[in-house]
Image 1 (spheres, rainbow, N blue to C red):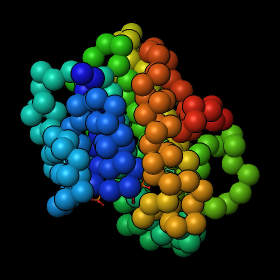
Image 2 (tube, rainbow, N blue to C red):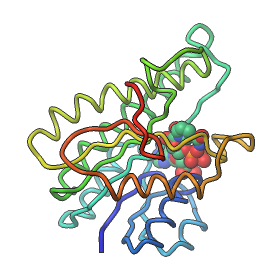
Image 3 (cartoon, rainbow, N blue to C red):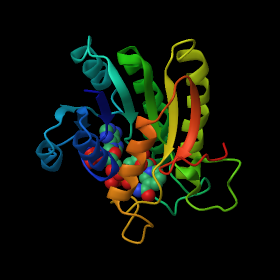
Length: 221
Ligand SMILES: NC(=O)c1ccc[n+]([C@@H]2O[C@H](COP(=O)([O-])OP(=O)(O)OC[C@H]3O[C@@H](n4cnc5c(N)ncnc54)[C@H](OP(=O)(O)O)[C@@H]3O)[C@@H](O)[C@H]2O)c1
């Protein structure tokens, strides 16, 4: 039975992917910050983690020392205020956005990397909005920049931290998904997104790094 660890699974894509992987026969450890009855109902093993709090990630890693995961997904993320810009946002909002979306995921990845088995993979839930090469608009500039920062940090992580280990790095775009973050007008539902993401995760071939969407299509960095 393959083992997955999903950070940020109380709702939305993380919750949906927990259910999807369990339906495919995976054992899933899934984290939440506050009470998450829908997550508990999936039957996953749950743990409390706030990715902003490095100590809580370290405690999770310590609690699972000895478990070797086939896949670890850093899914937690926030949108901030879509209409704020680099010119208008408060320093606190910018700090929170970049901390949660870029810095905290890399810190978590470094703490959890020893728990990933050779031949496995680590996923970062980024966004097509984090593509610098593909950017041709100014929508959600701060959120987009935070995901671009995450992408940049993962490029170094894939070289320096993964090193010679046989582990794939996946920078994942889930599609524009109907969640609290994506909104009702989004393109696809959670089920469509997570079925595609699960296919991408199950077909990951280490070593190397890919920036792909839920259909497995490559995105320009
Ligand atoms: N929806 C889309 O269209 C879309 C598109 C591209 C990328 N994404 C990315 O996909 C990921 C999931 O998005 P979603 O649409 O499912 O969003 P969502 O419905 O807003 O859910 C966000 C999840 O992240 C968790 N989270 C936020 N901050 C956290 C923290 N500090 N520590 C631990 N968990 C935290 C939330 O937990 P709480 O319940 O505790 O808040 C929740 O489980 C995000 O990284 C997002 O940027 C989404």
